[in-house]
Image 1 (spheres, helix red, strand yellow):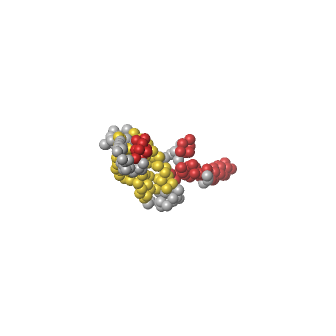
Image 2: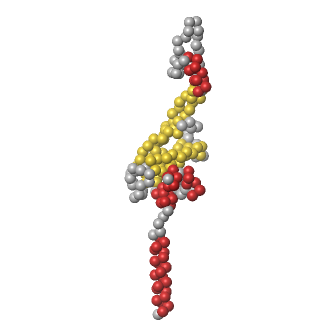
Image 3: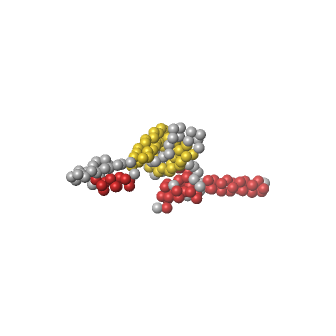
Length: 186
């Protein structure tokens, strides 16, 4: 009888200890990690826009020669003087316009979340990676936030694609690279 009572007390104490450890207060970093893990992001669509890159050195020289700040606009030439302005548009810069969707399944709000944007080639090999901070302070549970983000000067070729994700978990050694963790020390 004494052994049963001791065993019952021991099991009760052990149960209480396990129950209390489950109620332990989580650290602010652990809370952010938990909230981040319930976020989802995706690229809804994208398009790539090409624009000419004007050589700034040539542009500055043209402005000095003509006295004009408008590209291709020639200043009046002095009598008998010809002013030649040659602007070189040598390279095209490609900007990717991403239509992003972000949502979460949290009861608590998170001021913002850092997204990982990946660019892959046609064989799904990674070509580039960017981090984008998104303000989610007003994003309610189960709602979606739709936004556009522009990646400038990407090496896009036909067949490339983009993906977005909320990386989780983030190792403690990398948390300083994520604004939602960095803001905890402020």
